[in-house]
Length: 171
Image (cartoon, rainbow, N blue to C red; front, side):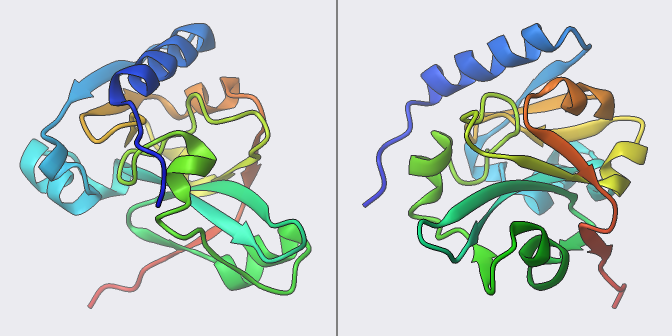
């Protein structure tokens, strides 16, 4: 069983990390039941094309290697290609949802690059950096962060990786 995340504590850490970035940002309050990307965008009027998800990936090694990957909601992370090769492992997958709160200190559906433990590298898909504004998780399911992409560059351990994610074909 994963540890309970204290939303107030993590939101305070996220706000402090954002303030330390020196970049403009806005905290958007949201109903925790609507925190998942599709529901949030539909309910609050944000475009999935500007919504970026922070996804924790585990590289199967001894010990396991974790990385936080940021990709637009309209794309699919290339876990078995780019991510796996960059991790230099034979197998990679999404980190188990029961492990993510322990790894990040954040709630599923709210993971954000702001205030992640410094031991976790953060890889940002190049397309994320080409947006005017981004909407990202806020550490809990109760807030989101609206900011320009350059705010991500103020976060320690960030690397922009072209081709980290691919556009999802329209149906």
